[in-house]
Length: 246
Image 1 (cartoon, rainbow, N blue to C red):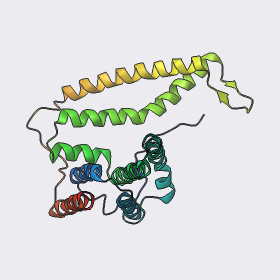
Image 2: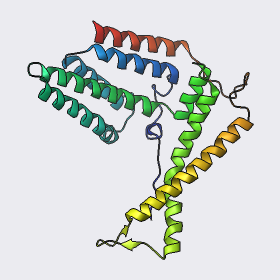
Image 3: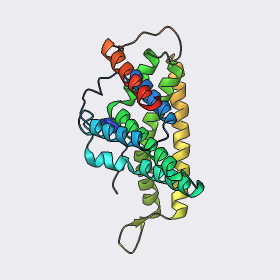
Image 4: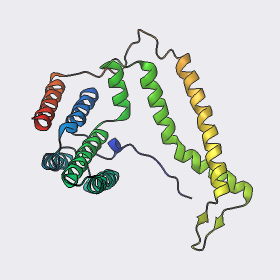
C-alpha cells in the first residue's frame, strides 16, 4: 500500500525572482489584477495577458511545463462552462462575452499558479502578520490547519493499515488490487474526522498556552519590505489598472 503525500506547489520549483518578492505585496498585486479584470469585456486583452503570464511562468517563474498544463485543467473546465452558458443564454453577444469571461478565468488561474509556486505558505502567513498586521491568532491558526492538512494522507494510510490488520486483509478486485468498500470507506472517513478534530483541539490549546495572539511579541525571523518589492508591486498594479480599465 503506497502512502499519498501532499506537497505545496512552492516546493516543486526552484527559487527565483518571484520567490524573493515580498508575499504581502505579491498578494496585493494579485488582488488588484483580479479586480481589474472585472472591467474587461473583450476576449483579446485577456488572451494576450494570458500568453504573457504563461511566458513569465515558464521563464522567470521556473514552473515545469507539464505541471503548468496540469494545473490549468480546473480553470479550463470552469472557463469552458462560462463560455457555453453565455453562448446558450445570450442571443446576440454571447460568444464575445463568454470568451471574455473564459479569458478572465485563465488569466486569474495562471496568475494564481504563479503566486502559489513562488510563495511558501509559512512565509506568506508570517508576512501577513508582520507586514499587513494580520492578527497572530489568525495567521498561526491557518498555519496549524495547513500542517494538519498535510498529515491527513499519512493518517489515512495508518488507519487503513490498522483496519486491514483487524479484518485479516483487504478484498481484492478482479485486477488483483485492494478494493475499498463503501462501508469501509465510511469508517475510514469517520475515524479520520474524529482524529483531525482531536488534533485541532490540541493545537488550539497549545497555541493558547504559548501566548499566541498576545502583544507585544518579538520576531525571530522578520520579513522586510524592500524598496524593490514596493516598486515592483506598484508597477504590476499600475499595469493591471491601465491595461484592463483604459
